[in-house]
Figure 1 (tube, rainbow, N blue to C red):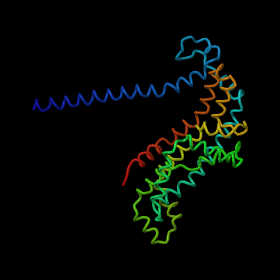
Figure 2 (cartoon, rainbow, N blue to C red):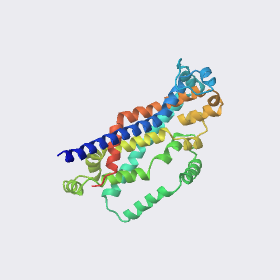
Figure 3 (cartoon, rainbow, N blue to C red):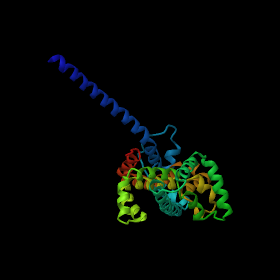
Figure 4 (cartoon, one colour):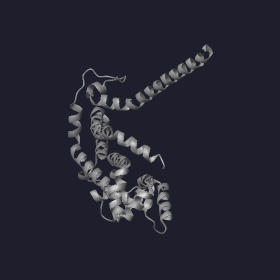
Length: 288
């Protein structure tokens, strides 16, 4: 009996040791991931004099201040850039969902000639470097006279082959019997999409929307390329404007304050919908 219990105790001890090691590694990784955010927040509440006189970076401040946040909003019209970014993000995300949801439904449920060929060509587009697409889009938008307009900012971002593919894979997990039964009852394709497929795949749809919001909010290259009128600047342009004016190089705490303000909406959005995001990602990784 003792010989049998000994291996059991040894296995339990090994499991306990492995658990401790795993938690230690996860804690170290969490510190590595969180530290940049902590440093950004810490720098944003340091006075300019305190920051400028630090020969050795300090990991805390004895006299935090919020003056940097006020200075960030007065150095550039950050509130206007915030509003522009909100308009750009909401409209782009809404239009993209109107485009990709019917497209994913068509590729997953409808039968038409050349469907597989068209979808293969769609996937092949993902292999084209973004730089080439940006050049083409820039020339097209310029020829259409849409520079320094919200239309010029929004149009190149209203579709995504990857999101169509992701949503198509989720739609295909819904049994065909539901679609056939709905057609027998005289349900139209649009009604079936709205009443059956979208509610079932809601976690994935929410995940796609949040990912698109993050993509639009963090967009830098395209807005920087297509706009030179400050009336259409986004928050990413605002940070660049601070840097180019020399203010960002001289007053890093105020620049960090602007970055904190810009980052807060995305952090709050993730915290609110984190469960939906995890559920949507897990659904996207399963089949059947």
